Structures are given as structure tokens and as C-alpha cells.
Image 1: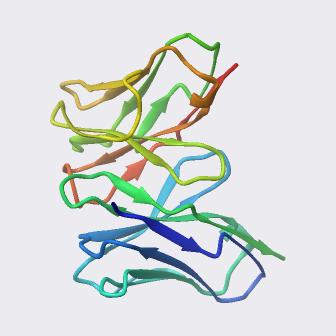
Image 2: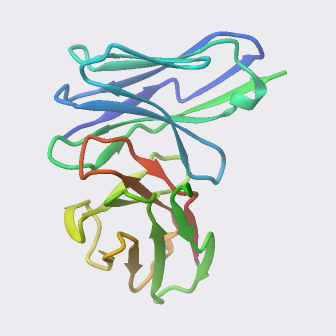
Length: 112
Length: 113
């Protein structure tokens, strides 16, 4: 059974800092890994999808890496802004169909 | 293009009642999945439908059921509501059944009193 863990559970940083969010998974037989952002009480916004054949994926100030062999992914946010405050979730699909297994999320607060 | 749309956005029901939640996927997407998210946790998988057939079911009681229509929209039904069913219900749309990017709607907040 796939299990996904995110560390830290919460993070508070001053504006402008670079930060790293961590995601680990127990079953390395994954096809991809997806990072999402969730604002309070809202749905999920897809940030990045990394295929298993890739090691990195970038979008603006966001960079996600994937190491299948060690069962880890990181989301790097450069020059954080108060608008980045949200919960960040990582998820991996099951091998046979599209069920996503999510981590518990990291609650990020960026203060001015 | 419109994203994934869910209705209603908020709902209050009484214990024992039944509820139907609706989801319209992104145009061209054939797969719809449903998730339940309780406060402070990650979303939990309930169902996946692809081409109107159930492709996967999570660890939820039989009070939960779903279906997908020929236009790929979907409904999630929950019978005999319990207080513990209070949650944010999320619908995800994707092109195919697996290993493609998932896009989520804004969710339906269900409160059972």
C-alpha cells in the first residue's frame, strides 16, 4: 500500500526566503508525481507534474525534483511571497488506474 | 476553456438524509474521480470513473455511490448521511484513466447536522 509523507507539517518564513518542501513515498513504482496548492476551503490547483523519467520540472519560481530510487520529491520555492501562503500537497498515482494517494500537506505561511 | 466545475459549492444536510453532488470535467477529459477531504488531512480517494465505467473504488461504505454520464459528467451520491460525512468533496478530471495530470474543481463543502 502506497503511503505518502510530507515534512514539515507547517512552515513559517519571512518574505523573500527560499524554501524547500519535502515529500516521500513508500512504493517507488510510480509513473509520475504531482504537486498541488490548496487555499483555505478551496479546491486543488495543479502546480507541477513530474514524470518518472524526469528528475526536475520548473514553473516560474517553483522547481520540483524527483528521485524514484529513494522515494523522495522536493518542491523548491524561490523568493517566497505572502501570496505563496497556502497548503502544498504532493500526490502519486496507483500503477493500475488514476487513484491519487496524497500526503497530509505542508501549511506554508509567508509573512511580510 | 472552463475548468472542472462542481455544484453546489456549499450544502447543509441533516443526519439520515441523502445528497447528490455534481461534477463537470474539462472538455475532452474522459475520467472523473471523487475525493473526500476532512479538515487537516489530504484528500482520500472515493471513486474513479472512465468512459462511464467504475475503474476504482476507495475504502468507503456502500452508502457512497457514483455514476458517469455519456457527456462524462458525474454524480456522487451519499445515502443515510452521518455527522462524519461532513467534509470537502473534490472532483478531479483527467484525459485518461491513469498517469495523466489531474485537475480539480473548487469542491463542495458538505455539512451534516
